[in-house]
Length: 237
Image (cartoon, rainbow, N blue to C red; front, side, top):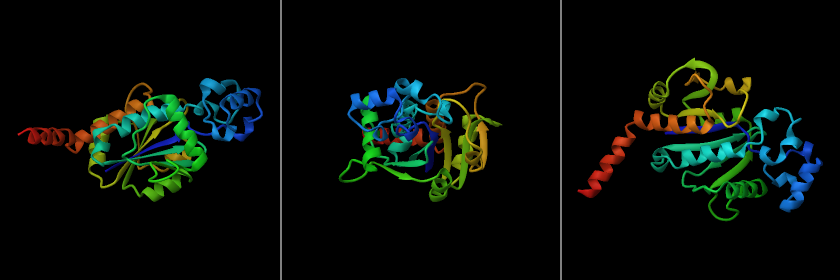
């Protein structure tokens, strides 16, 4: 089983420091919601958030949306061999049930996340598909108990996705940390969580590209594509 963590992810409610900014107040009135229940989004709040600490790493919920669609739609997840988590830049951990079918529409995804901010889990009643708790990334990793942890970072050792996946496939409970932010680097605290830090391309790749490729290479390393095709053939015979 592979553990995927979108780390330092640019997904958070509008922070208190900018609640009184005219852009935020106007946006809040239009949405009919308090800013604490609205997702920070650079496409709407750029001028209000530009002076926030680590501004370049914040306000990109679309990155999380794309990554989760790739992960949850993968054959690895359909086989029950993937566990997916989001750890946000404001130290919230989101656990995602493998059976979750996220909205493809971005606005509906934002509505889902805002419900999560409000209730702490969604749906509000019945089995929780997404749950939220305040927890630091080191505490989350400690709770997940990975046997080997890989971080994808430009400063890491050059390796191919295939080589990384082959190493992960040898572990009982490997974890990969992918940056869920648009610019910048992982904090030193996050880097210290890794057993290995790797760089997989000569250029910066989008987070969802890294997610999709490492999942696919891990599937190949454990023989999953062949296994699933054999199941298909056997059903037809």
